[in-house]
Image (cartoon, rainbow, N blue to C red):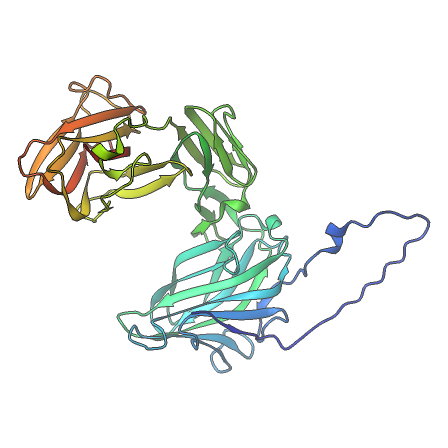
Length: 432
C-alpha cells in the first residue's frame, strides 16, 4: 500500500524577464524546460518541492524536535515489529513534485543513527520509475550519529530527477526500533574516486540483450569502498567488436553473430563480457509425442522448481528471455535439483531429451552428470568428451537419454558438474 503525504508548505515563484534587442532568433524550448537546481532535502525543514510516499507501515514517519544531529529537527522513522497489523516494515521515498536538476552534485549525504545496531537500505531514484536508481544495501547504523554518503555515478544524467531519497528497514530480532535522519542534502564532494563496476560475463543470442542493474564500487573520502546497485542508464557504453555485438549509449545490446565482445564504460572501470551463441537446434518431434518441461517449441506441461536450494548447493538459476526464445542458465553450479511440482507420468515415453551448452572450457576431465529419478531411485547419466565427441565448449550438445526403469513416474531431475565446469545453458528439455 502506498500513502502520500504532501509535506510542502512553501511556494516560490521567480519571474525572469528577458529583453532581446538587435536581432531575433528561434527560442530553444529545451533551454526553457529546465528544472530547479536545489540541493536541500531536509535541513531542519523540508524543501519546498518535497513530498513523501510511505511504504510498509504508513505511519512510520515523523519529525523529531528533540533528537537532532544539528539544528532544531530531524526525520524520525519508527520501524515496527513483524506482528504490527499496520505493516511489518518501514520504508518510504522522498520525491520532488516537479523534478530537480542534480547535475553538478556527486553525492547525496545525510547523518543517521538508530536506537539499536542495525543495517538498512537507502538510495535515490526510486519514485515513479527506477531509470536512475542507486541502491545501497547493508548500511550499518548504531546509537551514534554517522555521515552516510550515497555517490551518484554520473549526475550529468539527472536533469529532471524526482526520486531524491528512499529508505527501507525491517525489525531486528523481531523487535521494532527508531531511526533518525538529519541534514539530508546533495553535495559536490569532489573527493570520490576509483569508480569501478563488477566485471560480469553474460550469454547473448541473436537479437536484443539489455544490460541489467550493475554493481558499482566507489571509494569514499574516509577510505571505505561503497558498493551499490546502480542503473545502467548512468553510463555510456562501447563495444570492442561491433560486428559481434553492438551497443547503444544507454546499454541496449544487439547480438549479430557468434563470438565475444567486451562492453566497456566511459564513466567507470570494469567490463561486461558478452559471449554470443547460436540458439539450440529447433526440435523436430511432433507435439503429440512430447511431454515438455522447458521448450519454446512445445506447450510445457510440466512445471518445476529450478533451484530448490539443496544443502551445499552453490547453483544460481536465471532464465534468459530474448523475446521469442527462453534459455535456462545455471552459474556457480556444483549440483542442483529440478523438482517437478507434480510427478510426471512418463509411462508412454522412452527418452529424455535436452540441449546443453557448457560456457566453460571442455577437456577430457570435464563431467556433467544428468540424474533422472524414477520414484526414489536415481540413475546417473555422465556426459563426457569420451562418450560424446561433439561435446565442445560454447557449442550446443543434443542429448537423448534412454529411460531405463519400468517405473516411469518421475518426480525430479538433477544436474552436477566438476570443479572446472560451473556455467551451463539448457534448452528443449522434454520426454518423448
